[in-house]
Image (cartoon, rainbow, N blue to C red; front, side, top):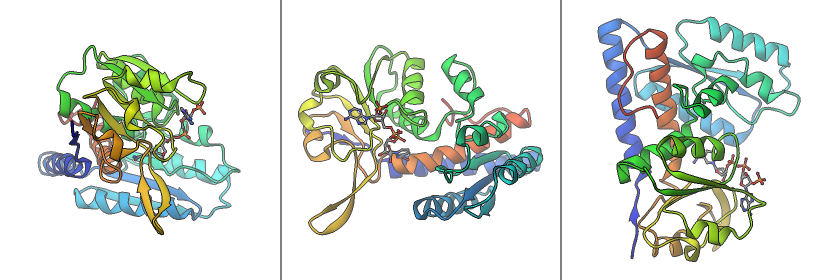
Length: 296
Ligand code: NDP
């Protein structure tokens, strides 16, 4: 079997189109322009690239983009004061603090100072609790994008065996909650899991979020399974810098029923879902009906 390649780039474009349509309606019918504020502390090169890309795509769908670039030695008090200002600003519907933060800043404290309604990354403890109890919340972007791709491919996920490899707060845990919410039987695997190969072989759905290049070989994958590869790993191959996932794409695509490539799979969905979350947050804060198909 050769797997269907799930095209995250094309899917993300359809999400952005839906978002743009909704933004246009919000402007026309209600005179509201959704706004996303992104806060970057320091000069981490990868973070700078992400922030630039987020700002560009925010403007492209017709939303306002507010970028706040702070020095690496910004004090916690100053950062919290900025977040407080953004929390109170009615033109800002979504706030994202780019992670990781410099070591002297307490990430949990900073994230939990964002108003939960504006927490478009879905990392605030209130949103984590709401998601865990099956209530309406802001959902972390990468797991949300992964779920959208799975729903698009399968329709219903009910009753499927899903294995999530990785238990981070950003990807693994919320992904598992979302799959549970869609009535999958969910196993969360991690670095202490015994016989990971056997665990993965039972899965109809495999979500790999580990951060280890090509760790999951094709012979761990059940025939016909759907593989969502969240990993983004930069390696050197044949003298070139290349991006690879956590799954060995070449061998896995021979066994899987469907698979996301790296790059061009989950990656593009993450920013698309950030834009979707911002529109959702804007609608909720204005008591307007939410766009369909853009939330979990
Ligand atoms: P973390 O490092 O926070 O978590 C990695 C998880 O993998 C941990 O739970 C760890 O287990 C587990 N793990 C490590 N080694 C093994 C192993 N040998 N076997 C089984 N499990 C293992 O990473 P993130 O969740 O933040 O990110 C994971 C990957 O996803 C990275 O490559 C990252 O770049 C990528 N990513 C991609 C995004 C996108 O937009 N596509 C967005 C976010 C992340 P333990 O808890 O026991 O240590």
